[in-house]
Amino acid sequence: MTIGIMGAMSEEITPLLEMYDEYENIEIGGNVYYKISYKNAQIIIAYSKIGKVHAAITASVMILKFGCEKIIFSGVAGGLNKDLKVGDLLLATSLCQHDVDITAFGHALGFIPEGKLFYTSDATLCHLAKEVAKTMDITIREGIVASGDQFIASKTHKDSIAKEFHAIAVEMEGASVACVCDNFKIPFCVFRSISDSADGNANVSFDEFLESSARISADFVSRLVDEILLD
Image (tube, rainbow, N blue to C red; front, top):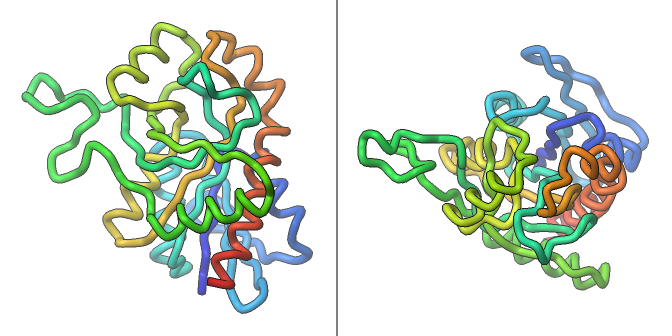
């Protein structure tokens, strides 16, 4: 089996790379992919760079070049729900693109013709994630995650996205990865550790909590990989 693991920034995959002893660096399309032989499988790790376009390129390369059969996205996100606190682990049940707007043609906000408004995470991977959470004695939150090519710091903007899409967190890559995986029929899941809360102070708390939040998510994903290989 070949499993792809993605993050958007180097901080989001560094904790994962530290968990494995050896890996091969492979450069493709201006990015580096880290190939790891682990147990009876291959693991491909990469950080896409920030944004939906870069994330879509990386996910496509993982599938078409490396033959990834499952893709996991690990990283951080901003909370939209007041109940989400910094460090909380979030499983995206589905993902949408909050910055897509062709409503002038009668389409719903976030919808692209011949696409989907919401992309649903793989049920089996989600089930395994919940089992891992139980063994780690941690609470994993679930909900809709909204993606867009904007860092959302304004409370007004956060509230608008939450209301429109019923989303509980916002980030800049997940929905594009979900779209690629859906089109290629590849099971995927997106995990985010909350790095900033819904209190309007995103520009302050993001930098402060990025590294610690990424490590929470990375630790969880490494355990999920072990569970996938046992399943």
